Length: 400
Image (cartoon, rainbow, N blue to C red; front, side):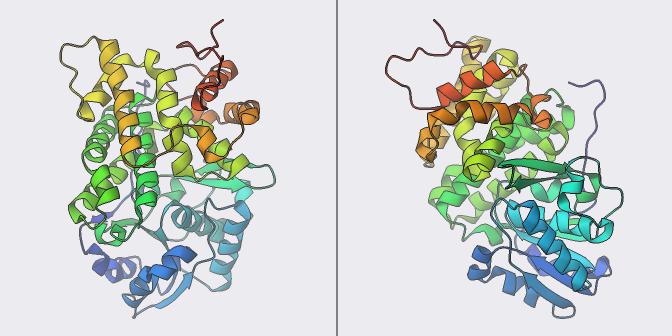
């Protein structure tokens, strides 16, 4: 635990089945007149953005759907220009992490000027952005309650983030009914993204009592409900449990930060366009194996939260149950086990590790000291075993 604990939180959270019906009240409370709904082309096809816009008939409302998956800084700049040109005074982020992060960044660019790249890093945004309401339709990123936005830098083939208190929502609105139509594959990927947030927050060097509470509760809910949400998508109880878990995981990592699952996932996205949730899901058990020796007791807590029976086991054996539980959950919901299955060649290991070492926001919170050699060991184990290749030891270094 860090000597000084800081917990970041939004000012208003509206949650409950059917709560989308209160959206007009939230817009009126923020005294807006010209509203932009930022979403993506896939969600437009579901009709959800149009339904949301219809709730705001007393306002001037437009829908902006030119949002990329894993948005680039250029696409965010384009959205911000649209916001300024149309005289928008409130932005609604509607969808998964991509529309929500785009909306968050567009809101600050509209008032601060410049380009998205100007604000990459920690607390580089000088002034508040436009008011923003963030409405997730997936249960994974937790971006609706964090001060972070992660963006792609296509020219550099990497991902970097903006961290700013001015990215925090004025209102986050969570309605599980909006997630019912989410396909099973996306439910699985986003759910594992949330689990990664929770686990990394719990073992983070920056963990604190509040983040611990939210992280463990997120782990419990995902462990009991994610399988049902993936395979029985119409089960509203499971959907609500998973959405709440994503919220709690966001509250946890928004202050405790994430570790090297995210640190390695970012170059997988930047170099090979692997969706963020998928990259996290595949890497999670491999990074857990690397980190276990630095957080044995906490891994035991994770095992208990996932429903594992650890009575009578040694602390080390109990900790290992956490990794087995994650692998079992991943298998049950169809997550790939190895990086090879994502179409990434083994020859990419060095480039991925080098890029990951530049992600200080993930290197510093990681419970175990991060070295280039350690990342090479993680990545070697994350590829399908090669005949004759020795296994890595617990320090991520190949054994002779």
